[in-house]
Each structure stands twice: as structure tokens, then as C-alpha cells.
Image 1 (cartoon, one colour):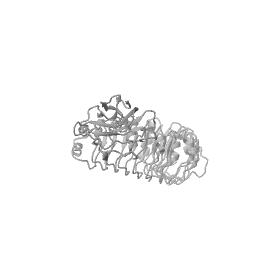
Image 2 (cartoon, helix red, strand yellow; image 1 turned 90 degrees about the vertical axis):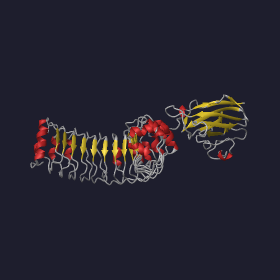
Image 3 (cartoon, one colour; image 1 turned 30 degrees about the vertical axis):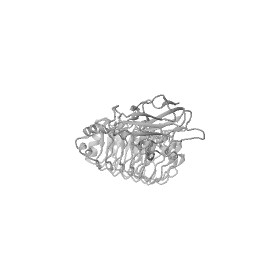
Image 4 (spheres, one colour; image 1 turned 90 degrees about the horizontal axis):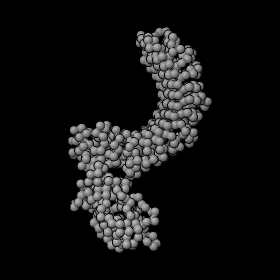
Length: 499
């Protein structure tokens, strides 16, 4: 420890004395040594910050601070940490980031948080790591290319940050951390595919792989039901079509700086599973040409970032969002008058979107559907479309999927499509061929298991209504499943008898 100290350091020491000698901040004091005079606090000091100086080493006197709990020595010139640190029985937080260390601090039995980022510790050197209480390891930007297996022995570890290294794999043995690990950050490494061992970390709440050239994602992350935050920004993704229905705790999704043009149907449908939890959605700086209307149903959304995309339209359902939401929409090539509305402020912009809302399946109804219908004869009924606010739709363009299945069969096809809106009954050019992959499974060797239904959009005559036509060649009891955006309409499934 040294005696030559700056006036700034003297003032900080005096202030520490005045405040009981428990917290001493000597950061940015141009110190090359830890001043001897701070030994007067050896029985009281709990927090010592000597960061952002030019201290080259710790001296043995550090062990005299018997009750020290927090030691911050980041941004110095430390080449090693002295063995005497192990005598600090109450030390729970150690930050020695941005130094020139090559060896991991060790034998710290009470340590909970260790920050060794921005050093030259490329491996643990096969040393036996004695950090039995460690819960957070921040080990970023050390040019690590081989995963240090010694980390797997840290059985109390909850947070592992390995961002900014050169890793391209995770070992299967990371399963050993599954019982405790809740946060994993492997951003800005050199992964080229999703590391599947992550799927074994069943208690994971925060997962970040941003800045890796993944190209595509695996659906393994969708089984991690405790996830709260996922970050796949800047991963060269071109698509995102995953079932999020198991991620019922998800609050944050980061997908910025990718090449995704739109969410896939699985994602659009499963957004309904996270309506009440999602708080942040970052789709900025990408290639989105449209965003799903389901985003507007997320009434607890507090931040929506859509800037720097290729959006020309915005779904009317965004009207449903809280007007105080932090929403970024520009720059985008928005059609008139959307760009003008934004200039009037977000609350006005959202309010003006209301007439553009589409239908919401659970609010839609059916009329003219009797319980007994005729076989071998044309039948029809009407779907009445309502939006999320339960207001009648005043224009067409909604999509409905109708499945009519013989009771007792289980070959329902979720993607069985209806003809294009506006199809006239009998117009064979608009009917999906029976052998098309999109058509219902039509026949067995003895009977029809499903009946093809044609949906006509009545936007020219009675906007907001849709007529469904079908003709069965046989009698029987049928269930009628009607959905919009994967959600059943009110009363679906219906049961009808064809006589």
C-alpha cells in the first residue's frame, strides 16, 4: 500500500470516516497503490471500490479488512490476485474485470458474484475451483474458444455470462447446471447453429444468443417453460415460426437486426398464449413487411419497437394497446395516411387505427345453422364477423377455416383451407382439389370422413358476413369446427345431423 495519494482520494477517505467507515470509493483517483491510511477502516469497511486506477497488484494488507463484503478493482493493471483474498471470509462480490489477469481468482468460499470480464483468462488451467457459494459468473470477452468444463462443478451457479468470446459449442454436460441455472448469455460468440444442450436447462429464465450467425433456430427453446426473456437479435434469421404456447411466462422477445419478413403461422397463433405476460417486443432494424394483428391483443405490452423495417401497413388491432406504450414505428415506408397520423403523436395514431381492426374468432357467431340438415342437397349458413372489441366488422377480408368431420373420426387437419374469399358456389376454379395437401382428407374405402366447405366473403352485399356452402353425399352425425387465426369462433365446434 502507498502513501502518495491525490487530494481526491484524501477527500473520499475523509467522507468514508464521516459516514462510519463502511463504504470507501477510491475509483478514478489516479492511484497506483491502495493507500495505507485506509487501514484505519480494517474493522468496519464492508465495501471498497478502487476501480479505474492504475493499481498493478494487491498487497498482503488486503486480508486485514476482516469484514469486507464487496471489492471492486475493475479497470486497473492487475496481473494476478493475491492469495490473501481467500482470507476474506465475508467477501461475496468481486469485480476484477478489465485487467490483465490470466488466472481465475480462487478459494473464495463466500463469494457469490465474480466478474472477470475483459481479461486474458482463456481457460481455468485445469485447476480445482473452490468457489462453493458462487451464483453469478461474468466471464465475457476473454477470447475463450473451448468451454471451461470446470464451470460445470459450480453447482450453485444461477447466472452464467460468456458473451463476447469465441465459443462455437456447449457440452452436453451443461446438464449438470440444470438444477440452478436461470440465466445464460452466450451472445457475440461464433455459434453457427442453435446449441441443443440448452434444452436440458429446464430452469432457465433468461436466454441470450444475440450476435451469433445462426441462420436458423431450433425449436428446442420452446420447451423451456420458465423462460421470461429470449434474445435472438442479430442472428441472421430469415424466419421465425415456433409454437410459443409452452412459454407462458415469457415477457421479453428481442428479434432485432435479422432478415425476418413476417412471423410464421405457428407464432401468430401461439401469441395468444402470452397475451397477458409479454411486455417488450423488439422487431427493429429488420426486414418485416407485416406484423400480426395478434400483437394488438397484448394489452400489457409496454414497449414495441418496429422501426427500420419495410412496413407499409399497420394492423388495426394496435388500437387496443395502452396509449402510454413506448412504440417506435419510424422509419418505415408507411402508406398514407399512417405517416401523417404518427406526426400527431402515438395516442392519436393508435386511435385512428380502430376502423382497420379485423375479426376476432371468439367473438364471431353463426346464424342459419340448423341441427338437422339434408344429405345429398346443398346446405349453407352464415358466419358473422366481430372484432376484438365485439363490434361488427364493416368490411370483408377476414379468413375463416371450416372443417366438417364425421363423428368418430380423428383425422382433423388444422390447416384445411377454405377457398379464396369471394368464391361462388359451384365455381370449380376456386375449390381446393380433394387430393391437394391443403384439402381435407376426403374419403376412406367406404364413406366420406369429411365434407368440403366453401366460404364466400359477402363484402359486396353484406360486409362482415361470410356464407358457408357444403353438400354431403351421405347421411351421418358431423362436427363443424370453425376457426379464425387458429381460434375457434363462439360455439365451435357445432354438431349437426345430415338426414
